[in-house]
Length: 78
Image (tube, rainbow, N blue to C red; front, side):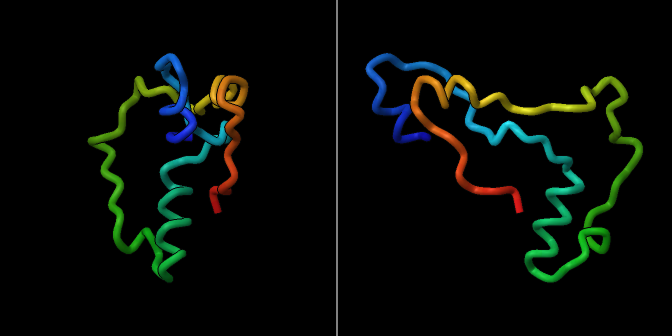
């Protein structure tokens, strides 16, 4: 994606994402299990740092990169 962006005649902004949402918990589970560890043994969730006004769901939209660059994600989350 970066190479395709750099080779455009006109600079522009692109969202490079899969278009699929995953939680931080899912990321921790996948990363820690990849090395044979349980994330709950290492990651502490402290309610003092919860953000009640935070958006519950965020997902990147890669459609512009797909349409203008011909790019599509080819690596899966897991």
